[in-house]
Length: 461
Image (tube, rainbow, N blue to C red; front, side, top):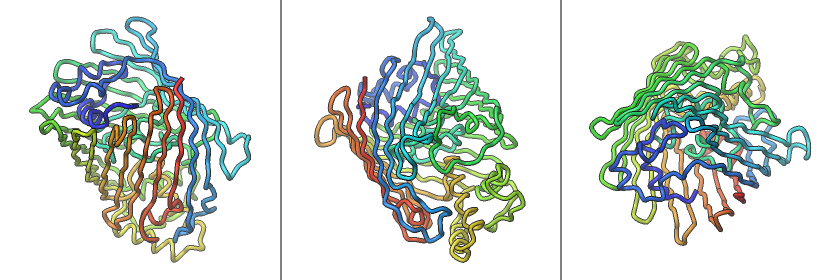
């Protein structure tokens, strides 16, 4: 956890879609390895067991569009036993497992109760290497793609994978989430790689959860509710290392592209794009609500919207700068064409305030936002993402970080500041302060959670 943040960011821009048991360092271009400190090198596979306690408190407000049922949760404590490990079963066979078992105390239910225990089975898969640098994997895999941090258009398997988090940083959310049951194959050669993944449909679509799920269920109904296929390939070309992706999910097919380039020893420029034909966010959210029974099957749209499919573009353009003092700064422009436009947001607030007493209307309006969060899909069409991370800040073993996700239409923003101090190889203490800032009729200012504070204690066995 104590690796240099700048080096990790540089390495991330190049190490796209690597297999679970590959030697990642060998796949990073030589120019990046020379620029990155040795602390960025990944350690040998090993099992890690940790005990975490995270106490979260929220400051709530009354949103201008009433939230059905209100926001009642203002305090939560989660105590978790977390296991991440890899075990070599044979010379060419490896088992990977990632799981978190938690007990949750929350102000809106009794403790202990059936809602207290929670289990997040994030990964569990076998990796077989039938030939050098060729890998076949089967099981639950957290397959990640993309070079950006604030929003990854090509991270197609992120949908419905959220688990309870201490940090709202998008780059942290994609590391700690539910994987998808799939078959995945990849081959790597000098100057390129190719991979294919197939995730089968095992369940019918299930309703959106408005809070982290309780109980010990595996959650495969969330990650395996449709047949999905992903093909990808990357090559080293003119120092750009492009990665091409082809993704199919149900009736929709999308193309994707990742590009990154190291400029000198301090700057990485990167771009991530995906595009395909499908309806906009509002149409898809309402359709999902009707299909899963959350909304009435014959309910009319609560907002004016085009129900037809159209070609939608997603784009992230960014740069990363790493200073000599272990400070890394990222800046990204994020574009999600299917998201809400300025006019859509005006309609959302106008409808919600005019019919504040109508539970079916306000419920449908908030459901659109809940569905987008469940899909990890940006609500807003245009955003700006800024992030800074500083290792060994002021004193050794202290890491400071912060980010802002800004709606470019109303200037509302999600901001977070975090600090982690490594007392020893076993103990880590952390604190995170977050706020949804903006006017009452803005995206972030209309959320019931105004501010939050998290205190974390982490012990590694």
